[in-house]
Length: 244
Image (cartoon, rainbow, N blue to C red):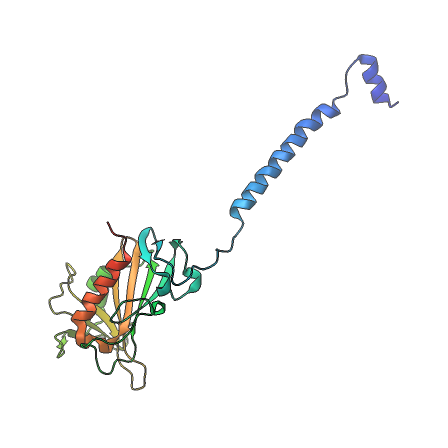
């Protein structure tokens, strides 16, 4: 028998090693449970399988702004899921405004330009973050870089060219002359110019909804019937928003 055991027996004191071990084991078990829970919560998970393109519209949010998006319009299959998104990329046939995969016809309407070669509108919805709102860019940024005078095109739109050497060189600011930059109302787009080759000029229409930015892209040649484009974009965005 060890001397310590003889001493304990002589004094009548019980051994304390077992009493100390039990709390230690309990603490280790609790720590293991806590670590497992944290690992389960933080461990990255792959999203579920993409939704079929012919499924009903999906309720999604971008920067907290709610939208109802048809899966067939989503250009990236992995984005075909309900819930929160940082960005969604969409395409719609013009002039039907139906998703390309839905079987809807993309035939051009009677007012469409004869030289039209692209039959889709592309829509991107992203979280705005710290980006300047479109209305603020129009008031404070664009005037620094555009020419002083505007030319009026046969379709009635005013065109201001961006000066060479500016961040927007090679582009034009095109708008309805009634557009008021102080209280933005009316049609306004920023467009690249048609190149000598097959690449068409592309126009960008921007709108902010809550904390999400919507950018619609379409060929510049469509501006021959810009009032139909303006009404179509308004109808398209309204259709993406939840009713009520």
